[in-house]
Image 1 (cartoon, rainbow, N blue to C red):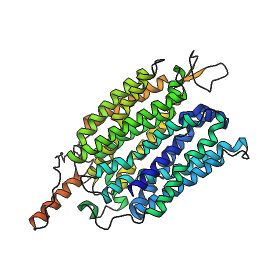
Image 2: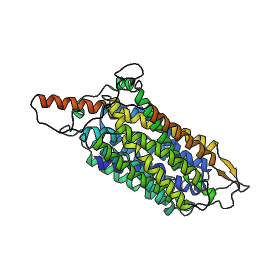
Image 3: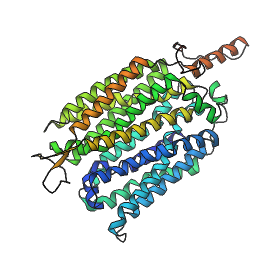
Image 4: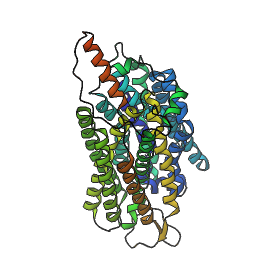
Length: 457
């Protein structure tokens, strides 16, 4: 199940951001502006906002297997429709419409695929394995983004190469749907691995109400969502941010791939660390603070010409610390909202991320300033030779990162409700003469002021 979800999330992310590293060539192929091409990414965010709660309901009520299969088939259908936009007999004036339909279908798969890792970890893995399993499944989405950033500039050397890219990027989607259809046979394992896995979650709407009244969770949702939105905006616009300063599509692809590769290392280390220590709060706050500092460095470096090493290093630092947040925040979200169903807490965090992603991208586009750049490597220029400068957009993104880091560090004080319940259950079993099982020590957290109006939130 974990491998299936990994492949599906990789393929879905490849479809999502396949055009971003080659936005200039994509604009030429579809005879649209670069901002129009950005909507091929934004549609993912909008679909998550519109259908995210539906996906959460399906995952929580109908089960993990149903959600994964729906995501797999929507994903592959979107990949097929995207390929149609590159066929020679499709009229030029509808090619962009066709590819947008394909992107929309693939986008509808994303809420199912991103909402599944936390539920998979809770139902299939033990207390000392959940964060690591969540890390592997959740970080598969950035792996797909990395693959897209690395491969797209290599495959596409001109506008005419776009159809071949669409075909190549569909291969993981076909592999994923075969694996899901043949390999996912049940939503739960025969034997629950933990006490929380065998307990019944809150009814969907009751749980939703509790989540929205939980102060710690709301702080986490806003901060984590802003981090995801920043990452989405940065990966979507990176090529457009650095091309005015003399950096090619290949350089943008390398920088994006390094950002995600180091992020996978950071996320992996963070997941393993919190599995062993249960220091979710401390790890989240430290990672967010260092990610905000790295974002400041990235803002300075991306406005400098002929500094490829600094660009790559700053992207790597940002990725390392920012991605460490993903498995930690998703797991601590479940902890502070238990016994609310896992897909609900994770799904709302992802919805917040998509909402802020839309805001970041649209505001960034509004802040672009057309300028003359002597060494610009941007393929799309205005009639007077100007290219959009996104320097002020980077200032906006950095300001958001710093503000959210301060919010999380100063106000996030979670209670580890799931771990505390499991510790109580184990103590009861020991007292009743049951087999003793070693559980990790559970850090205490203040119970006061954890909800907006009720201590149960």
